[in-house]
Amino acid sequence: MSKIKKAIKSRWKFSLILLAVVGPGLITSIVDNDAGGITTYSIAGAHFGYTLIWSLIPVTFVLIIIQEMIARMGVVTGKGLSDLIREKFGLKVTFVLMLLMFIANLSIIVSNFAGIAAASQLFHLSKYLVVPLIALGIWVAIIKLNYKAIEKVFLLLCLFYIAYIFSGFLAQPDWSLATKELFTPHFSWDMSYIVILIGIIGTTITPWMQFYLQSTIVEKGVQIKDYKYTRMEVIIGSIITDIIAFFIIIACAATLFKSGIHIETATDAARALIPFAGEYAGMLFGVGLFAASLAAAFIIPLATSFQICEGMGWESSLNRKFKEAPQFYGILAFLILVGAGVTLIPHAPLLKIIITSQVINGIALPFLLIYILKLINDKKLMGEHVNSRFYNGVCYTTVVGIIILSGVMFITPFLGVA
Image (cartoon, rainbow, N blue to C red; front, side):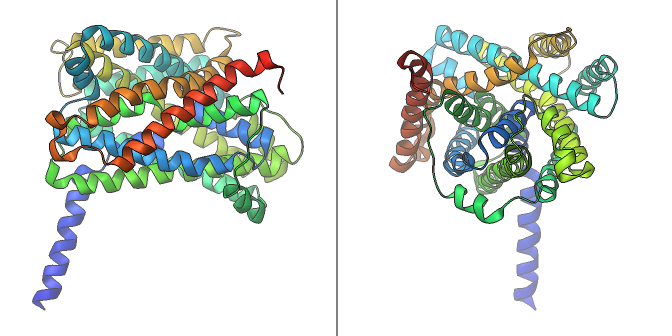
């Protein structure tokens, strides 16, 4: 009986610790499937069928490696990524990097408010009513709630991503072909194929994720003795995010690509799914788009404000009042206002903003990774928790690979290759 009691006690302890640290890794990875990500995956499936599914395997593997490094760095140092970059590389480098991240993140925020607008129109609601109400609701929640309460809201919103899995099954894909393509890498010199491939990398492994994950781990106060639970959460979150991506691609590949229908947005995908996969599939796709856009419109302004304030040495915490962290809340208010405002401008080029934001993130990622690798391999900073050779090899290979892809994307038009 004593062994049984010990086993039960051990499981309870494991569960309690896991619940205490759960949040940052799961939320960061899953919410990465925002409006821009859903649009990118939808276009990948509708325009190229199952042929881009293979990219999810290496992308998931690299995502796990990068997220684990960031989580480890946050737990060991107790500091955010921007803090560490400023301390190690100086204010000038930090300022330039923060400016680039600000521009990239602002475009993502606009794309997510655009996703909210598009999803609301799917359900015959005016974007001029829904978008301002959502923006106001986000601001009020940020002002009134502390981090723990907001984290619970994020975790609740993550549940709505299940809608994409249901949509994938309702589309009745060719599972044997999908499985074959998953393990059969393809490559095309077609410019649109390369752009979407970089977009998939850029939307799955985004720079904002790294800043937000490390900041929230520090905010949550995860200790090194509990790091194994955070590591487990990061791995699970990374796998779940790309399972969702997989189902979005196959839903569009099984219906829209098969029928030769091209789309420009995730909203187009939701509408186009209805004749082929049924009304429920289209509605679920729309519900998923709304929840994903709402979660990202909430989180990415927070991530941006965290990273800029940390980088500049300003106070940054949801547990502080407005008077105690004016820059933090000021940046948040600006991002939410501009993100919602641009969405409401008639004939704004929202699709270009969405796709461009993903490609910008894909191009910016290798440069951020170089700084992360320098930090994670600093023995004075990390002690015995520096990277292994394997981790460094994977990350440097990723850096080189993305730079090559970006170079190919820019030079292909001049070579006349299509």
